[in-house]
Image 1 (cartoon, one colour):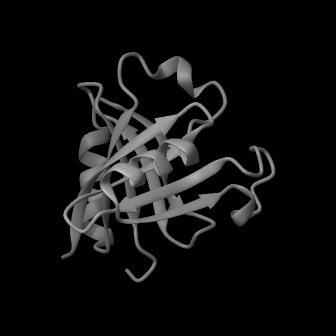
Image 2 (spheres, one colour; image 1 turned 180 degrees about the vertical axis):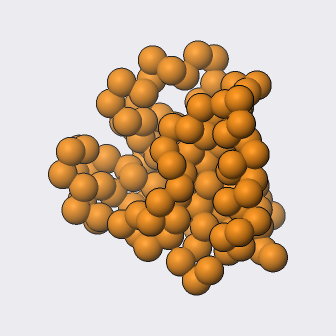
Image 3 (cartoon, rainbow, N blue to C red; image 1 turned 90 degrees about the vertical axis):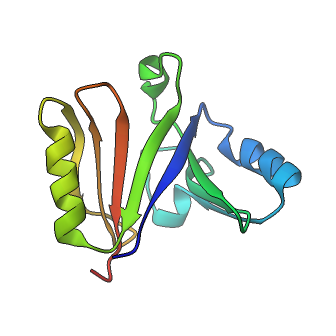
Length: 135
């Protein structure tokens, strides 16, 4: 089983700018995907749907917050993202973390081909799950 935990940052519409700033500091390969890349019409076309910076020794991802999402940030704009290819195991983790917590988005197939979902556990920690389409 190939699974990682990845820090995932959210920004109020300036993700691309911030990630280029981080790339300038840390180096590495930066991928930025916009909402228009996936034909999402209810978000700003050039807004960042997903970005990922891989430096060779560490990596993190980021996206523009959904409209109104900033209100839920509190003092943190970080989620833990579990990304892997074992549907049964990762779905079990999702279900276990959802007990006593809140499902923000049920696990479901997405426009990029993977299964994705979000849950905030009973301790208030936000988790994102992405299960690759190869599973």
